[in-house]
Image (cartoon, rainbow, N blue to C red; front, side, top):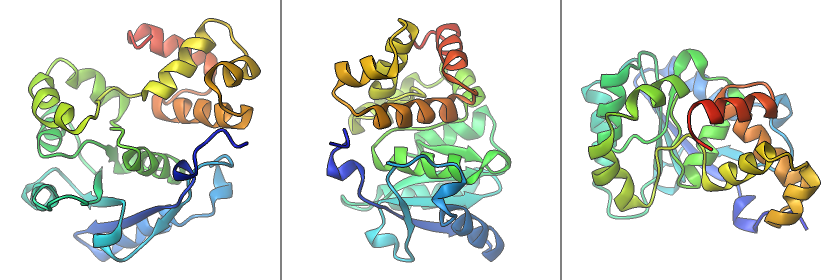
Length: 224
């Protein structure tokens, strides 16, 4: 058994929307890169589609959180059910811009300068699962300002702005308690390969090199 349901392995159909063709082509190339460049086996493949209407995730690329980008989010919010979940790739992203995007429904963001192919694909996969993703430094500075966004935007959609999903937090807590991969897999009813994949997700999302640094970061930030 893989330890993952079939729906967790199905391809994530992803569309890309940008204001200029160079940005569009660059993000499409990143999403379509060879999974062997750093994605561990067992992750859902990301498949680029030109049809926004059938996409699971829509990657919106912009220089800033401006009127054009916010209009794209507004248009998605107006779609009655079945709209793709947005992922924003933004050149300039500070606290004010981040909060504007969150309030408009942009729950996952990546700075363009930090947008490596493995990170972008992981953010896309997380969005398809209904999990928000933000740059770690932006998340830390926004946590004291997002009370209204949490109540009005995230909670009604059953989403969270925490940097790790409940599944990832459960694995990280067991690592912090000294459990090895085999023990975590047995207790959480996953395969060992799936646990290794989840640990990789955690290190990518937190921007750390290994599980020890992940535990230290999570304790320091009060996540566990």
